Image 1 (cartoon, helix red, strand yellow):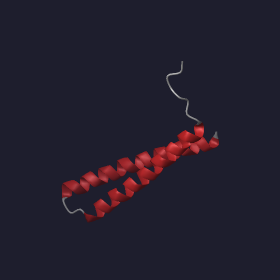
Image 2: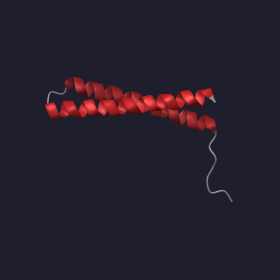
Image 3: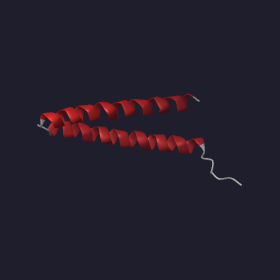
Image 4: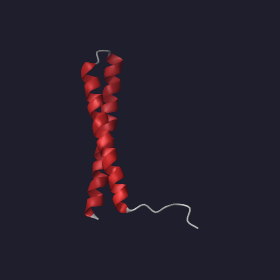
Length: 70
């Protein structure tokens, strides 16, 4: 009896593409918020958030690149 369904590799690649798209959208929102904020604490917050989201984006792109090499 199987407890977990095996997912094909293409399904994982599709999930990765969806995550990259969501991260791209989130990064655009962060940059838009950063352009419109004037409160110094919020400026620091959005800079930190932009750095975190861009690092996640870079990580996801590296994962996609490794999947393409296989």
